Length: 239
Image (cartoon, rainbow, N blue to C red):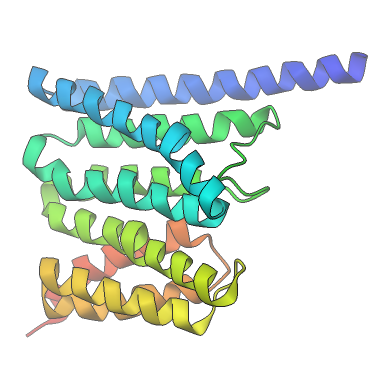
């Protein structure tokens, strides 16, 4: 009983620390870039939409197919959707960044209590949380440098890797980084890249596809952040 109480107390501390970090980050970002009332309204609408996707629609997808397809469905209709529309409805990066950090908290908190959101989460795989954190980093870093970099890199992960997962599930019937999944990611990411960044976008799509195959770092971190770095550096290398 004592051991169980100690474990429960530790979990409470972990959760309290995460909430405190989220509140601190929120205060810093809000103080730096305070959003307009319309941005706050849009933020509320998008948070509700994302929660609907995560806690309702993805359950339907998981029951019809499996949790791997449900994960990619979430990629498409949360991060992918927000990345596309964010520049049109937000003037500052505050809402996209805080929304992503909030969802990181939402996805990791149940794991602390060993209550995974099992219709899409995989045991010991924190990809969904890393995706949210990467999204926040992208928009926090590149909003005032070149927000198209943030959009493109986020879409490589949300849509490019999302299609990869669905193709692999269809072809291999299991969670594996196979050849045809990589082909699908390359094609989709190349289209995204050329639409947003031209030839540099295509080059980056190739690099992103290679990076996705490397298992050393979770691809939800490596693909978007490496892609953003490459997109930023390429113009300096061009004559």
